[in-house]
Image 1 (cartoon, rainbow, N blue to C red):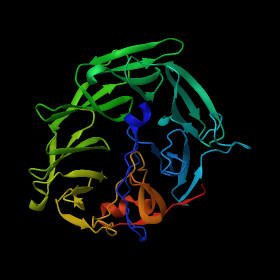
Image 2: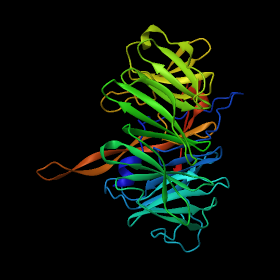
Image 3: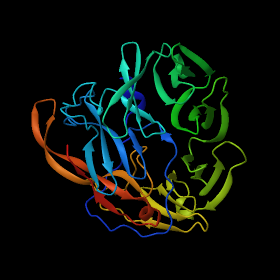
Image 4: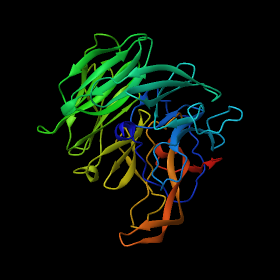
Length: 389
């Protein structure tokens, strides 16, 4: 299914039981200004909205998704609908998404929802308090292949249309009217990154040369994409955060940064110790002076001014002996907090073995609030999120 295939939520590796107190620090992690396209979350300083299936996760239904809201202070999740008498199972419900997804926010805090319709998409706006849901536009399919909405601004509603063979076009829908192609690229489109400051960031990969390129396309008519940075698929990983794109090199252990607007060159910020070499080094989070990195199955907190590293102890191990380490839901980091899975809980489930059905234990991950300040300092601090659903 289109929305599921392109924008499926990248679930985090889970954390085991145990909650620590919050770290005290005068430093604050900046609230992300961007909207991450891969996920189903949108975070603010006060809380995070997320789209999830409210049915039994083992029923594999993809048409019962709803919006939920988690307030950071209370660590409480509630269905994002305040409409009196609402049954929450039809398109009239502000929280109901069905097979759709959340794809953006507006200046007043309204959420933008993309719901598949016959031969196209419907764009809905949900009020910041969850009281109402209004139809913004009905857009026909943006091309013959798959397409997904990436943003909305004063010009119109923007979509990326994936063409046969993996090439793509950036399109804009202006009401009343039709889709206008802003540019079309011959490179194979691989991964959308985010929309920020009216620009669309995306990656293309060249599997022959083992090189990847991060591009920046302004969301305006007659825009042409600009190359931000090129890197090795085999050894480099990137993180778009703050005003920079951060690059980690697993061969040399070098952490570099380059302005996100594409100007200037990548500048080496620090060099990791020898133990980080010859591993894939993955940047997880940063505030510009500290960074959390992953390599060789462990998480490390790094002081970017000195390169000094501290190994972050896992909360435990799973049944197979693998360390349970935090990773954020995409788009879920807001201010000091992030949403992550944690606290494995077991329950009885069923499994089809090919010969019959047998009862077997199932392990569910309890959502938790993760303290980003503590993680950047090399500690793990979790608070369980209570749910009204």
